[in-house]
Image (tube, rainbow, N blue to C red; front, side, top):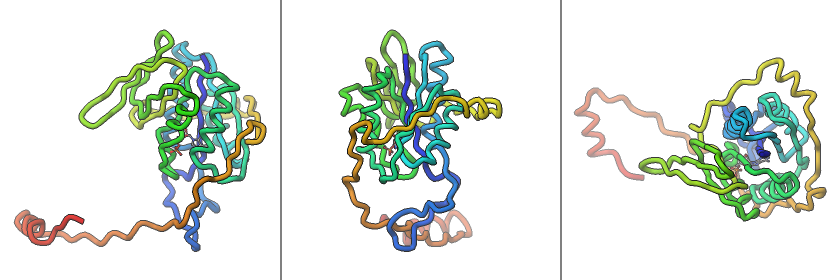
Length: 249
Ligand code: AMP
């Protein structure tokens, strides 16, 4: 079976984002970018399914600027078989990405699409759910364990107070939670091999998708600065402060 893994190029998680002076967006000029960490987990899960003989091909896809090729090459170095870049300089919102992924899912006919549970830049956590709805496929989101047997995926998800296990028939959409696996590092030989793996570029128009934004960003602002904390002498002083000064905001 084929697995499709969408990977997003985002600001590296180690970088402290800065807001542009005009408050229109996060400043990405000269900022280190990387694969969305949840997507690394998605690639890893797809590779494990391939290594277990369950998947036969892992196709990665990224939507955005030509620089997303770098993210795709990283995924290829982690073991993916081939890559698709949907190239556009339009700011892509989750619905537009879900429509692009739908067009590719129709073309590629994967049995499983594994996405990250959220992209750490916009924290939307919408794309996988929208894709499942557009395809009319079952979805199991925030997966912490995935087992594929007999055309079905059993997916454990962490919920308040325990673990919920769902069984979905394939084709289906799964999104990854942090504890699903620990992604591998790309080795140098695999980075070299990845340069030769197939990477095709298409445009949204080739897929018949209008990616124009439907939402307008009004303002982006830094979070309010936290006030400095205070050290207390002992537990009694702490209890006194909690009793007399602390308030629910
Ligand atoms: P979001 O709904 O934006 O939080 O993103 C959830 C997941 O959708 C990500 O972890 C990726 O797997 C996928 N995704 C979102 N945007 C893109 C993109 N531009 N290119 C490829 N995959 C994406």
